[in-house]
Amino acid sequence: MKPRLFESLMQKDGEFKEHIENLRHKANVHPFLKRYCEVGVREGLFSDAVSAIGRLHDTLVQAAYPEMIGRGIITVRPTTEAMERFPLDEKAVAYRYAEGAATRLSGKKNGTVDVYTNVTAEASEEWTREFLEDATWNVMDSMAEKVGRALGEEETNRIIALYGAIADADLAGGTPIDQGGAAMNWNGLVKLHNAIRDENWRPTVLAVNETQLHQLLTDDKFIHAQYLPAGQTDLEQSTVTSVLGMRVQASTLVPNGTAYALDTRVASVMLLRRDITVEDWEDIKNGKYGARATTRFGVGVLRSKAIAKMTNISTSL
Image (cartoon, rainbow, N blue to C red; front, side, top):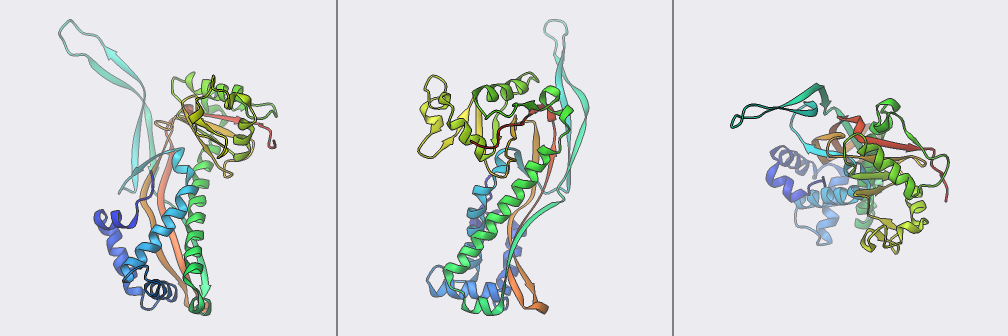
């Protein structure tokens, strides 16, 4: 789920609109917001404070999104609740009746999982008043992007940590798959895929470290049309987009030497209580001012058997 941009939020989210109105009033006194608005208007980038804050928000979102691979390896759902309870129906049971009668379907109830939206990810930058008085537009815009990237990494780290905390016995196959120190290859992917299929789920995403992605690119099966269509491997961009029906998500935030295959439809959920929000930040006593970006969410594992993990993969090419 991609974070929504400023105009969409202003039209559909009353709480966000009220927050922006409060920021607009602070733009006259807060050193960073004031300078950001003044320089932006002078450069002809926008006409008023609200437009300036919108540009700041969109800059943060666009910088954060490429780092948010965590949202690509989990189901993301917006919510307004502090907690949501998910019933787990592992298997469906059909009861037969006489011809022409209704067939009753029932789920085998195994329990529930409660997911609380009590996690806040945030990133901020601070500057002195003197620095802000002299800062150019390019410098401030670059710093806003830095905050966005840091927020994206923080959110992704939380989601990857969720998978890392799953007990070995609760994973697909009842244990992590040991690659024996070998590089990630076609056979390793087949093992991950098979582990989830053996649990009667269907893997949709493969999450790997960049090193493991490049190991795959040294395997001739990833450049051989018999195994993968040309559109799924881009040698010029050094990417593998899909394999065995799994979208490939690569990031250095995934621990080197570890890989995950997941059925994101059922494995886990991220409840997004508050998407990326821009806030002012100040420490008047020490003369520090800046901008902060936050998200508020909750994550939980729903069906750990829809998650396969491979360890002991070579950490070098």
